[in-house]
Amino acid sequence: MNITIIIKKLKQVLSEKKLNRLGKETGFTQRKRNVTAFQLVTAMIGALGEKDTRYLSDILRYFNHLTGQSVKYKPFHNQLCKEALAELMKAVADKVFSCWINDVLRYNNRHFSQFSKVLIQDGSSFAVKNSLKNIWPGRFTKTSPAAIELHATINLHNGSFEQATITPDTFSERAEMPVIEDLKGCLFLADRGYYSSEFILKLDEAGGYYVLRAKGLKRARVHQAIQGDGKRLVNKKQPQLSALQTRLPKRQLVDMDIEINGECVRLVAVWSPKENRHTYLVTNLNRQEFSTLEVTHIYRMRWQVELLFKECKSHNSLHGFNTEKASLQESLIWASLISMTLKRFMTGSIEQMFKVEMSTMTVSKTTIVWWYGILEAIVQKRRKALVNRVTEACEFLKENACRAHSKRDRKTGIHQYGLEPAFYAAL
Image 1 (spheres, rainbow, N blue to C red):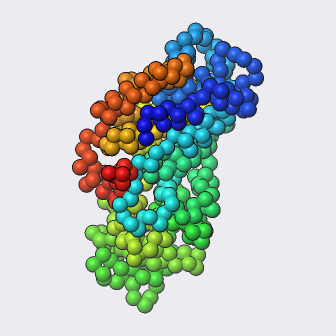
Image 2: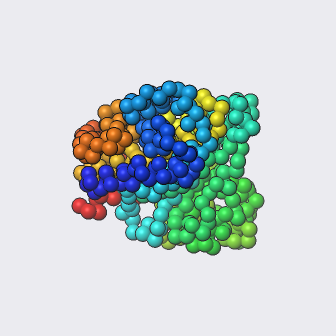
């Protein structure tokens, strides 16, 4: 990775010719205007990438500063409100998810080489203007009559989006999961909201792997249950899980085989002090290769998607804006995801160039120093300035956004679970 490659990848998406053509294809641009698709997309990415963008007028000011124009609020707002803008931003996001990525993590455990990808599924919701309740109905009708849910599939190796969808908060989470056939050879991690017996059995049949938090298993028959010290809790009888729960130890993991829809499935019981009860992880990972402790560590990797949502909300302006236009809310969500992906692309590129461990959160919240200059050079089509701004950004972030406690992270962070920076392979 070098500066030239970074710039090439930036311009694969933020190209005036390509974005203006995409604007016509999606119906956003019908005739030449002061606000072009290229300018608007770049300005939205830039504005949403700034921590303090709260209002649509903030985006207008960013646009005028970036382009050197003096567009007034009403004509600018008219462009933002076009329904085709949401389609345009989604098309850009899809391209970004496949273009602005770096493999930043790899496993140092040979057992993980069998997985082509490790995918994490989760969702995050937020309230929008109440007048949108018929378009974006919320689950909590009294406190949030209108709410949007962002469903995301995260690729653990590159720390970015594999895919994302936007639905009303009332829509089923399981309906937004990846297609089972696409999970062949992948390891899939998800919380209990995505669990279903039909899903795990079909995924196993399709050649995919999973670790999911399970629910609704009280009546499942337990064929065997072995504590961490080797003691067997089930002999000849096959009790229901509900009858066995009181005998499960709190200080040891329990490895079980249970019957789900006539099939034998592996289940790991883990005591949760926070919830004051056992939680259950269902998996098809081979117990000869993956111990119960490794299964729990794998599931804890799911926390990376929570950190990604936190980064989007805290430093990429992912929130409900004060607008009654449903398509505009959707457009702004895509812009937020794109800006976060760009920041993580820069983070991974710096790691590869300088062989240092970077903090994605620190990179994301230091945009006041380096963010605007790169986007301005792109919009103004100043190639030399773009090279200089990207070089300066990489140097600044290398010195100021490295992980502060990399050794500690190997004990308490993501690296404790058998992961390490991908650039170590080249050292």
